[in-house]
Amino acid sequence: MTNSIYCHGVCLTTETAVRYSNIYLDILGYLAKFVHRNRSISLFMPVTTNTYLLLGTNMGDRVSQLSRARGEIAGQIGPLRRSSSIYETDAWGNEDQPPYLNQVVSVDTTLKPLALLYIINAIEKQMGRIRTGKWESRVIDIDILYYSDRIIDEVNLQVPHPHLPNRRFALAPLQEIAPLFVHPISGKTTTELLNQTPDQLTVRLFNPDTYEQHEI
Image (tube, rainbow, N blue to C red):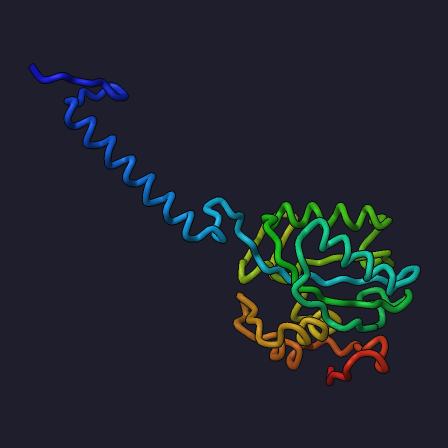
């Protein structure tokens, strides 16, 4: 008489059960060898995404505000890959306020888009930003320009930033660190967007003696 084993409601002969058990052990063995030979690779490593963030401030010690923002981003969002020079421009949208300092940073993050937006809003609040109206002066403003080449259209988040092609103050620092990055909707590089932007607001390097001159 052939011995039988029930596994998850399925009747298997003893020989079949042993055969499947050996196959399973073989698979585990191969997997263990793979992990051992590739110890730098984690099968459960979170996916890292490169994102470009625009920082802006026109209140208080503007240079210190940007420095603190970079530190908060590195600590709460992910390591900074590159940072542009600091640029100064008159206020956009509402010109009756102090000029802004702007900077673009490239950041590697494991955060999903909406989680990234949540942390950005938290950083802005930690730094003292109070939202009172559109285009108001701000201690710090952090915008998501790109989230890799993803196109995101949520109620509270649109990426690429919908106003990017029309903002020279964002394109100038972005062009410094990512001139060939391609806008996933228009198909144009940052350099092309900068050359073709209708925005004629003057953008200048904040400290020409410290930073390399760029044609903007």
